[in-house]
Image (cartoon, rainbow, N blue to C red; front, side, top):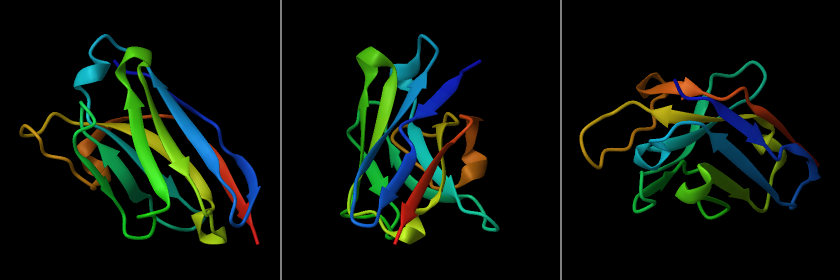
Length: 127
């Protein structure tokens, strides 16, 4: 069983920055591929970014590319999402998740391929 706890959300003006954290339990955290997703009211959960177990592979949704950066610290069992140049359309609940074991090196953007989720943290960007 893996437990994930997100933090760092809040209210920020457009153009501002936030850094989200996701702390994970489990001795094998360093082997997990981890993702960030978000869900706005009335919308489906959407992929934001993913990072491989060693940080060697990252992938971003087009909507956040160049503005958001995912990173991880395996010594602290934590991943981060640095969000810059925030826009009102970034407003959502942000979730971190653990990707199911797939073929070596494969990262996926599909929520069904993630089997552990945090409770989410609210990010609100005002215009």
